[in-house]
Length: 186
Image (spheres, rainbow, N blue to C red):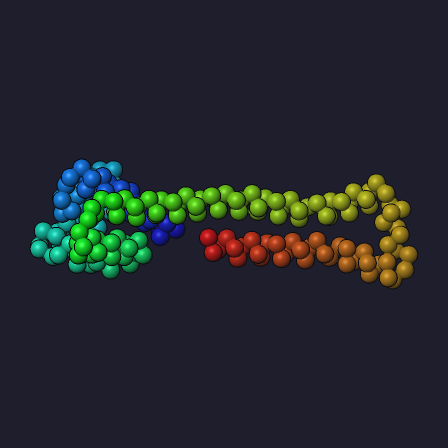
């Protein structure tokens, strides 16, 4: 999705900015460095170029970062703006804060990928279970017709057979709906 791509690109831009800050550049110069970096996605270059222009116009650092966060409407950008505002007010090393937020974003992205991988395996298992019950019933119909014939002796046994046939299908529907609902949340 667009939000996930933005997170990845933003994390990469923050890593670049954090590295520049750690190298001793001022925050304004580090922002300009990101805006000109060829390894950062053009959309991020554009955002950081606007941020750089705001800083060059004399906007306070915290206000410029807040303006960028408001423009992009991203929670991570809001976190960076808040962290920069706090660092600006109390002092400290911005590089550590920026790199820490970038690391948090990257960890969230990796966690999402791991969860997707787990859901892929779970989905395969759900599909496999969809075929086990009908396959087993079909196997017994072919190999042991006398076993299946016992279900057709009277109405109670027929009802039991119908219930046995319906249960895997109901379970399958429930499993697929649950899987889709959980995957939407990831």
